[in-house]
Length: 246
Image 1 (tube, one colour):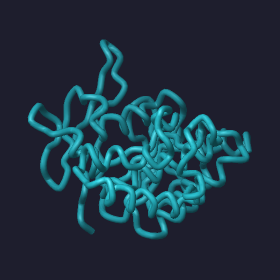
Image 2 (cartoon, one colour; image 1 turned 45 degrees about the vertical axis):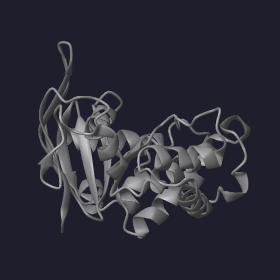
Image 3 (tube, rainbow, N blue to C red; image 1 turned 180 degrees about the horizontal axis):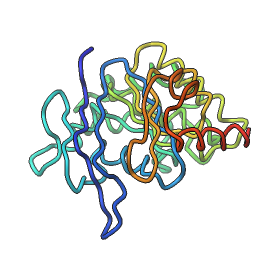
């Protein structure tokens, strides 16, 4: 399998607080990797480092073998290849749904308005949001906003899509509509890195699951390995807490 991203010895500190410690893992084409762990274990910081929204304190992020951590990297260009869907949607409130999905294509990919509109309509249709192209974010539900955010990310035609807790800001009845879009993308072969509390998604959709605890990767493996036969006591404790809550 072709390696797209290689994370090597990645660490991140905020002042004296070390949030990530010597993280290593690889993302290959077609991988769907779920990152699970308690709040504060470093999952979102890891994703923000991979997307260059945070600068790692040390280590490398190799994109097709080239280190993207450093001064000479064009971050917007890199982010067009490694897209991100945020917990809080991050849509532009003064733009329509359609404009939200066009603006990045025009500014970063230098597409014409016609080409950007065509791609935006294709992906909005794909996530079931084509009927809402003239709505503004305040006029649609949280689940609909998140589907627009996914369409916006897809319209940049990224190689890898990062999801940072994409359902945690949603009402329970809206979670399913977003997860079903993500499941469809996984089935179509989209390479995805997903920080999630949705254990059923991690178990049923992922090709690999990474369990993080206190800034380190504690254990990783296939869903069958991690959910069926976890090797570390911390992993067993974490999963049993989740089972008792559900």
